[in-house]
Length: 373
Figure 1 (tube, rainbow, N blue to C red):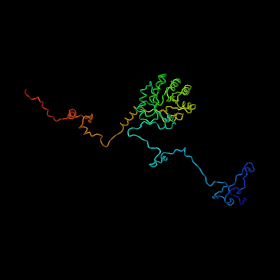
Figure 2: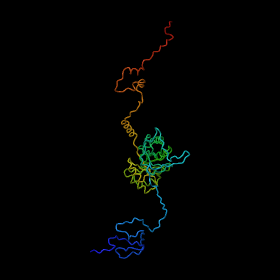
Figure 3: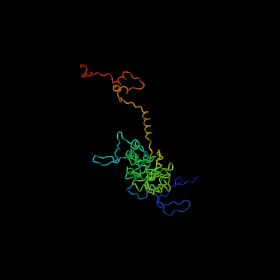
Figure 4: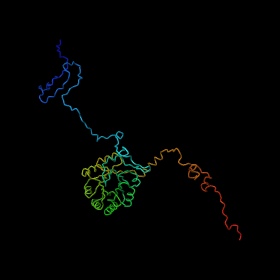
């Protein structure tokens, strides 16, 4: 027969007294330092039966302020366009958006837009103008219909002032023109740089073979910045910067990001530009490597024309009303509206070539006709 006591079967409940401290396990002695205050309850745990739960609130012996102030910084949070409220400005006409709607012409637009990834560039300031994207082309039609911040006009021929003048006439953005450095070098490059500045160029570009001495001579003549092209981070690149180059153009091919990182560690405040390739991933990689502005190579005008003609051929344009009345056009000239696979009647040919029957006017009789002498 099992001996039972009144406390048998009950759960072990800690002593509710405030001064009660449970002994430490394993040591056999009670903790004497930093005792944890017990939680005061309104119900005596000795009166609880097994399986009962205590749902009364627990009173904690702690000081809690009556008012709690908390601030959240949303400056780093980007909201979607549909959730972001536009910034408004108070004007005499009422509240108007701070960012006005873009202005586009009915015919004149900028259909050749630079990739959106180029907006991630920090850019550099030239004569008070912020430049993030440079268009690598010498096609005046492409230059005129693009929204790039500047034009990078470098071509594989001897620089000529006539070409520079044509580019400056067609462009609405600053133009950086090439003045040689490889085939064309020495005094001629210095003279071309001076002429380019007088024509209105925003800067001159020298090729990678240009020695630092030539860059120093150009910088002594002109006031616009000299862009020195480098292919690696070496002593030659450092000498070009020391000679007076204000901007470095990194043209290292697949090694461009690595060269950019090396140059950025040495020159944290020097503007660096480089080609970003054709994909968005290569553009981001170039920007993350330390480029302030990216040179973008647009498609040629021939490629754009071929793509436009392909879309025209594939489109099925069926206007509701004819653009020209074929009957009225036939009265004017039936040969212009005739189909090539349909024979033209002889009377229409005669009508088109002779102009149709005309009313004969009486020929005036000469004063001497019929007179007798």
